[in-house]
Image (cartoon, helix red, strand yellow):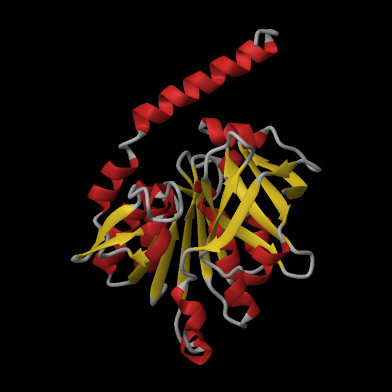
Length: 291
């Protein structure tokens, strides 16, 4: 059993939880994820690690309440316990094993879309702790949906905000802001790390390929069981078949077959919708006193 020691609401239907999991916290590295099972009837939910504190023994996750499993998790509060909290899983970000002096001579731009800000934060913090400034773009539909702004701002060189409706920061999508920085402001970047919705990562990768900037993406949105056994996260990268949860979740964005990955992400949509409907129905029955 794994205790929830802190819970915060970050935006509508988005919350963070600090979980007491000393072994996971001790081994966690940027880019990795955990599997959470809420209770005896719970499904395996893969979630990227947002933060970890080795001294406190805590790991922070960020959850967007959408399907039945994440809606169930949203009902848990401080002092409650999750049945299982397994990790860290997946491969760490490749730069953690690179020469620090080499990294200091490169300029990174991190691009986070929506809850993608959660896995971006520990990566940006890692660079900050190693004395390297990176630029960060955080994008969302509107100002209300921007999360972790202050945390990321505290460890980044420059933080840029983009909102689809123009309610905060740059008026438009993150791709438009990348073009603004590179083409109009003359910014130079050696590598882009993009994490967020699959469609966002597809178009960021398409743009950066045109701009000649190496790009890494995280394919955590297509993960299901976190072990590679279900095959749901199978994706083509270049001429090879990879599994996001075992070989990744991070890959070369210019080699990922995003059209295939987007189709794979949607393959269980009908089943998910039906399960979500059943869950909502059960919740209404419980509220009405019907078992």
